[in-house]
Image 1 (tube, rainbow, N blue to C red):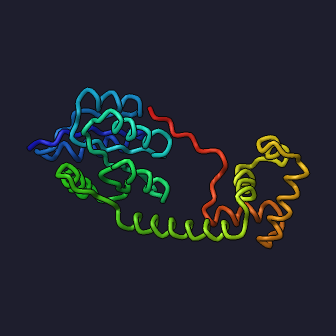
Image 2 (cartoon, rainbow, N blue to C red):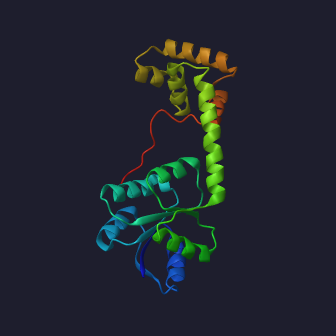
Image 3 (tube, rainbow, N blue to C red):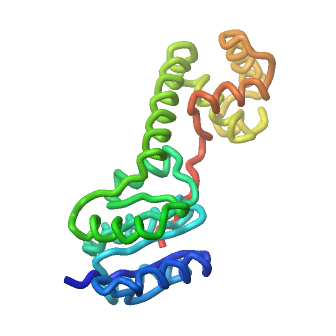
Length: 222
């Protein structure tokens, strides 16, 4: 059975390498190659490939949105995410979206072929080393978040997130509809509770425990 494959990457050299490798396989048909997320969605809609290899420098900036759109439109294409690094946030979001494979660009070429065949057969392919590191990082962050929640109040945690987001006291006050003096009071209590000396130490402490900025990062869908 022939596997119809679409290749998508924002790096031409990656596209060239993948296309050259897969065209050597008699059971794999490269039906299209794409350089942009928007183009990729149109190609998947048109060709309905069995497998899409999605290789982007930053999967969270558009790539995972594309996977979400494929799911929303109930397109049956299985997606393999090809990336340079695989952090825990990307891995978890990809798993939630049902991505069939996640591999690093440094993987040996012959393993890419095995990955496509396994994914086409309904199996899942995860790069074990990255998955293990991402899982360990996630567990550490969850433990850190529980630690912070046991020390700070919800309002204090909200303020910490805004500090991570590089907001000044005045901006925090405006967002929370409180006075700038009240923000300073909260920060004073936060420093005392965590035994920290100022904003920079607070930011390092919070990031090490997995707290994220107050505003969500953009993830355009198309």
